[in-house]
Length: 187
Image (cartoon, rainbow, N blue to C red):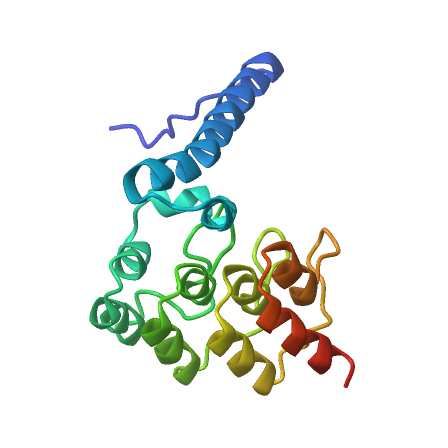
């Protein structure tokens, strides 16, 4: 019996073609999420803008994402306490988003509270440099924004595009959060 690895070798054209196909699929998926949400759930234009922020990889599946998607704190507890899922490890390698990022983006407050109590890093950044505070400001969750700032998350930090949580709140017309973050950023 041979112990050889079966390795597929791509030449440059094949690699470029494969990459373009995957990029095209990604764009189609990202574009379809707001349409699916609008057609099936009747979301408004602001809600659709927020829906565009939901990463395409929530359509992927792993146990942690399933637990977050289904708002199952018990399933997530099992994953964390068994050591199967580490608090600050990305649950998707494409977006680098952690369970905390997803809990905020999907507005899962009980899961958010659980992850924070377990010691999740509040300053972890995803692939775009966004923190949980930036995501909370974008989706308009004032309670999460207040909590994160009270725990020392800097409201002046920017993502890789130069956007701060204050700018995210303004982009998505979250006035109460915008006022709060403006006050906290000036202190």
